[in-house]
Length: 464
Image (cartoon, rainbow, N blue to C red; front, side, top):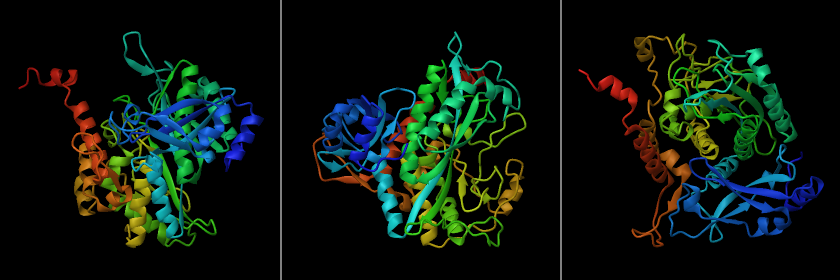
């Protein structure tokens, strides 16, 4: 399906595909999608007046119970036919309040950062690799891999496990292609019950919109097959975690030329000087950046070094290299940088904003990431890591939030947001979005970690 550019294009698609209803949606700060079902007959009002939501009820969007409704003004470019539900379409909008853009809106934040890049002549493009697991519950409520036969010690690329999920995987693949995203591979990943569907790249806003729809699609289709599709970073202690890898590049806004490509790269990675500078920016801001791309307590249970028994395929150090999966940034193909740290437990709009801001800072300061690293960082001795002055990624959400709050470049990228008075009354005060986000994440950290677990009782009740 060709991507619509205007409301008139949307109306034509509604007529051609006999669309009866439209999900009008937005995402809040933690990545949750909220929607209302709008009759297609109301399409004119939908795109002019928008749809109202009680923002406080929807989630974290900078609102209290006393706040006015948020209004969602859909972007016609996000209009998509829902392939598995006849007569249904989906559209994503930006959050406004009383007719003005709402500074807490993740989609608006990303658009603002992309405008800054465009002022420098750049278009930020990404592709994503979203890993997910198909799971279910036992009769006693224990989480399990949905396919009981998917229990091999090395299940990666297992043809039999992929065949057992053939109907679901091929349905998703065909729908991705119908949506115009060009799926180019489906595979069983390294975890039991884990799969990945690769999607071609686009500009950052379009890719974030695609990611939101993709997550909704995979979850909905898995339910039809009696399973739960989870993008949770680490649902099982003894199983590989789920990542959401970013493959990033800057393109010329006028010529649409990939500015990261240099086939004469003296370092042999086919990456331009601009690409190295962008990489250096990501590495320089990695600790605070992590709070946006690995945004939950559970995220840091995924980011552990692999062992022979539990392979993780994730980075633990702030490094870059060639086709080496133990590095944070992997340069595996010409003209693109793959970041292996992100997961899909939060908002892609905020994650992409952080990546672009950090990378552009490297470009503007002409940073050099040094020579690429070719070690296996899972087995490298601590003395060698110290000798090479390799820094490690944060070990917890609380640690990454601390570094985020210390990062002035990321503070500037996410901007300031309005705040109410001490009793919820309107005021002219503002604060940094980063401070708002940090409060949410600190509360989440304590909500999860302050609870005494059965493991702690077993370990400490009679000790010492």
